[in-house]
Image 1: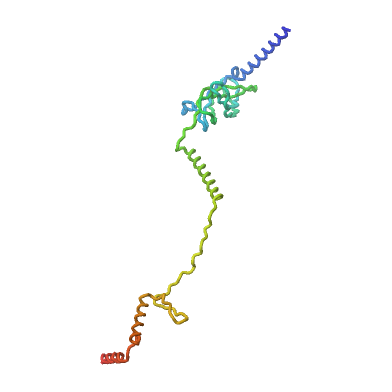
Image 2: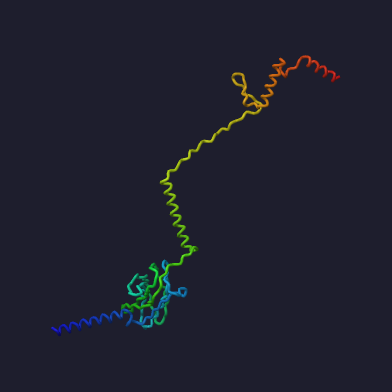
Length: 260
């Protein structure tokens, strides 16, 4: 019984060693010599990962294995700096391009960040395969980075355009709600008078059916003169416009003398 137990333990240890060796080979420790490095651009000297933006790195790959190697993909992950627990897997970019021997290739890699500000561990790796179909993973970047929020600026065009769109939407909703829930009073438009009042000309009098006159159209000073002349005619017994026969004959005599 003891011999069987020892023999089983030896078989288990051999199987474990084979699996570990295969895993190590697949991780690139014993695979083709492919060198990969990644770096942030010079404008990001402090290796900041900005939330809400696409963060860029440049991955440099060189095949020194002397074999035909094909680049499959470049991927990454953000991990907890202390426990190395994966917080979020980043974008995986597929390529499928051959890596020529002793030729460096610079490949851009971008990922979108929306994480809690603070220090995190960033890991970037690439996968490649050989002619026999074996797939290997090579680490290109593994370091602590700082996740930060973008700086706010009142002259930020994206921010201003966002505010303008939100304000327009809110204004439209407020106008629609006002027209829906607030009763509107209808204005009644009165018809304009089509005919204008015509005033009678000064000095004309319209006779009525009873033989009188409409004195409201006669100027006041004419009415006064008419009334005074009527009073004088009533006192003298004659109208102010009539002339006596003696006055008429005297006037005609003067005219005759003048003609002579």
